[in-house]
Image (cartoon, rainbow, N blue to C red; front, side):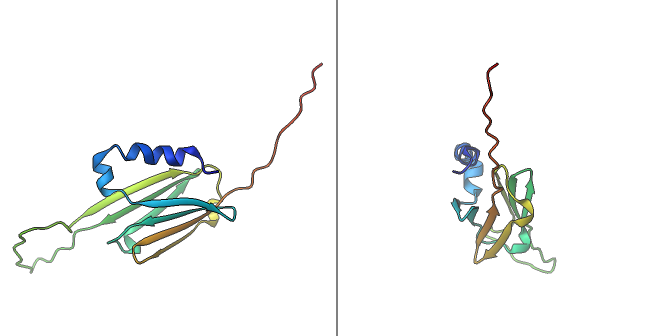
Length: 128
């Protein structure tokens, strides 16, 4: 079962209109003892994408800088593709941070995040 925090964060993000416009759409599922994240990030190269992991929180951010050419004498009638920055974070809890695999191809980022195996620490307490 996925931590409820993952879904709660996304639910709140949907109500912030500015984030919604730039939100990176994703699917998160469990398979073979791993969390899997499949995220659409079209228009970015893999060099534009940064993935950080800190205490079970995965932060995925993208930033595309404006490319300018000083010798360019274009007069834009409309310009929508100059600069973008967006990010999303998910709290997965206990994961094997050193074993995360990331792949980016054709605008889709795929992460395989191995879960740490839980050790049962259930104890019976004797009443005296």
